[in-house]
Each structure stands twice: as C-alpha cells, then as structure tokens.
Length: 315
Ligand SMILES: [Fe+2]
Image 1 (cartoon, rainbow, N blue to C red):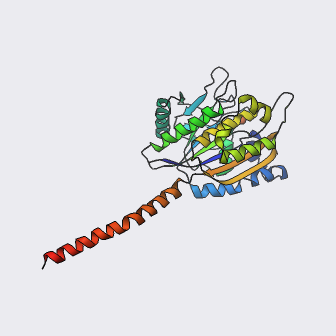
Image 2 (tube, rainbow, N blue to C red):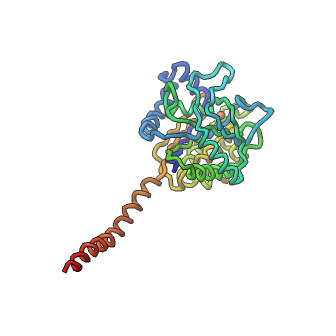
Image 3 (cartoon, helix red, strand yellow):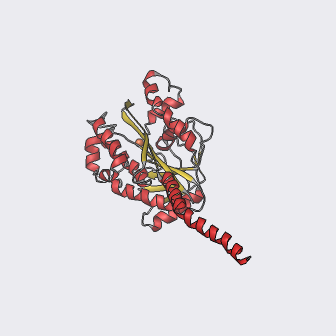
C-alpha cells in the first residue's frame, strides 16, 4: 500500500530559478538563500521517495485567463518545462505517475472534490524551483512528480480550509493505492510578498513565522485565515500560502517538524521552508513491539502444551 512519509513546503520564487540557471547560487546575495536548503537536500537524499505530489500554482503558463481551473491534477506521463517568456528553464522534463494520478483523481472526485483532469500540461517555476531546492540540479528528477495546480491567480482562489480538506482526501487516495510507494507532498508558494501596487515589496516576517509555527502545531487555526487576512498581512501574493495547507492536510496531525528555514528577502519575497515528517512508521513499530510482548506468553503456553501432550500420550 502507498503511504505519505512527509510534507515539504517552500517558496517558489522565480528569481531563485534564474539564479540556478545562470550559475549565481554562490554569489553572496544568493548563497544565503541556497545555504538554507543544504540540509533539505541531505534529508531528501536519505528519504528517497518513490513519488512526489507537487502542489503549486500555474502563473499563466499552462492556463491563460481563458481557462482557470481551481484544482488541476496532472495525469500525463510527462510535463515539459514551460516557456515563461525567456525560453523554458533548462531543467529536466517532469515525469508523472499516471497510474497513481488517475487513482487520486477517481478517489478525490468521488469524495466530492471536483478536480480538473489534465492530460497535457507544461509546468512553470511554481513546480520546478522547489524541485531544484531539494533535489539540486540532476539530469533527471529522481522520482516521478504528480503536479496539482491550484488557482491563486484570479479571484476567487479556494479557501485554506478547502485546501486542507483536499489534502486529507489526497492522503486517503494515496493510502488506498495498492502499490507499495513512499510518497512526499510538496506545498509551494509564498511566503509574504506583493509584486505590484502601492504595497509592492511588502514582507511580514512576524506573520510568516507565526504561520510556520502553526503549520506544525496548530494547522486548523491556519485554515480559518480569510482571503482578506492573507492579503492584508502577507500581501496580494501571500495567498499562495493556502497551497501549504494542502500539504498539511495530507500528513499526520502530529507530524514532526524536522527542519525549518526562513530568510528575507529573495527578490521581493520572503523565503520560507519546512519539512514535516509523519510519525506513522515509528508508531507502527511501537504497536508491533507491544503486541509481540503481549502475545509472547500465550504463544509460549501453547507451545509448551503441544510439547507436553505427546509426552503424556507416549506413556
Ligand atoms: Fe508564485
């Protein structure tokens, strides 16, 4: 059976992608940002997931204003990098997992989340920048990635609560998939930023850090943040943080925070990153140990009885 082992969230600032593509990661301005992801790369190299589900938003790359699905699940075998105005990023084609994606579509839609099924789609920096941050710049991405695009570009985006509940539905879908797969879920976007208007350049570290705290300890509180509150506190583009709540809904309520990083600014955006690991595996181990201890004496008694019986019969 497939299971989700961890959730990862990070900003997906396009300038981070440009710094990677143009060999600027060691420049003093960018070194500070990339240094914060070294531990994440180590964690990912050990975790070795079989599949990733990437929650991100399309920035008018795959979908124009003519068609904006609220939730769009990539069910194709591959997703080429989109041309975002200066040619496609020099990153590997994202290979999907059509079988798991189709299973998620069926399970989630029957759970009354009306996803759009997408069989052909290019993916932009919203998905590829977080992949770079935790996988580096390999020739091929080390595992299949199922993209799930969330509309946060044109009003109305989904609520944080809706995103959280979608995460729970995705978890249920993954856990009913018969193959033994270890899955990680990426929630991308944010943190506080605003790219236009009188408040362009807004960053609210206090709000961001409280969001990170609650993401670990009290995610239900975050599901009550309204769109207006996101815009007021985190800027117009801070609404991207609802996508972190899809990730959070997909993992354990008591998931363990194993890493966190926050820095400002990168371009005009606050960069936040967190890794939350499911405790499930450890809990399973403990249960097995307790069961074994409880059952051992009974087993021993039955074994002893089986030994004694033939001895009596032989007399
Ligand atoms: Fe974005």
